[in-house]
Image (cartoon, rainbow, N blue to C red; front, side, top):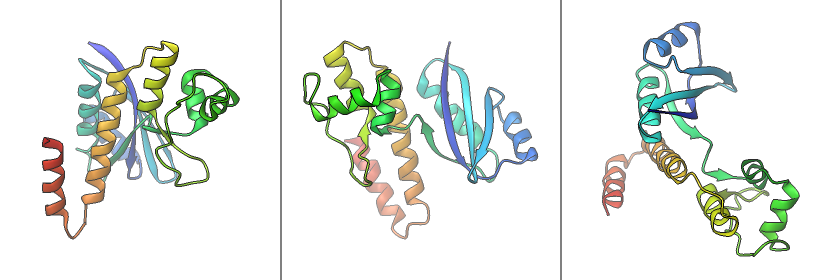
Length: 177
């Protein structure tokens, strides 16, 4: 089995009792911290695949009352500074690639301009670096984390929505196609 590293971002306050419950639920391979009313669980989990590791960790965390996993980091959406960090480049180098003043051009378009700083999809950026620089992307990790974060976001959005049942049916149909 391989060891997989990832971090879960969890809603719910971490108390000594809850920490004990998390360890008892099978989260003894995680280090916990808190920030801004969120709990962070950094896992080093042994499992056959990244998917198995993350799903088992989410299941273990959510057996503890009061905790809900919000997302898995590293997140799929990244700023230019995060691209620089993940690729070992400077921020200036990444900015030049984005603006096509350096490199082959055709850098992926931002996924969103919701803030002053655009965000890119890491899976697209990683594929671009693989195509243009021969980097070996960790496609399993990228695909698994992207899909799980999408599912967690959909689950969170559906909670309490007045039209949750039709939305669930539509999502199920969409995923089946």
